[in-house]
Image (tube, rainbow, N blue to C red; front, side):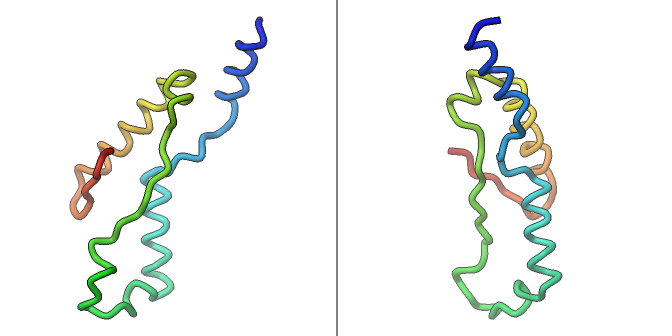
Length: 90
C-alpha cells in the first residue's frame, strides 16, 4: 500500500459533508415546526421560491470516490421527481 492509497482509504472512511435531501427536508420541517416559515408575510418576495444552497462534491471527490458522488447525484434526482422541488444544477 502506498501513501496515496492510504489517503484515498482515509478519504472514503470519512463521511462527506454534502447536503442530502434528508438534510433539506429536516430544515424545512424545522422551519414549519418552529412557525418561522408560517410567520412570513404572504407577499414577502424574498422568501419564495425558497432557495437553499447545497454543498456537494468537489473535484477531489470526483477523482477519489466517484461511486459515492453518483449515489449523491442519484438521491437528488430521485428527490426532484416529487412535487414542489426543482433543482438547479451548475
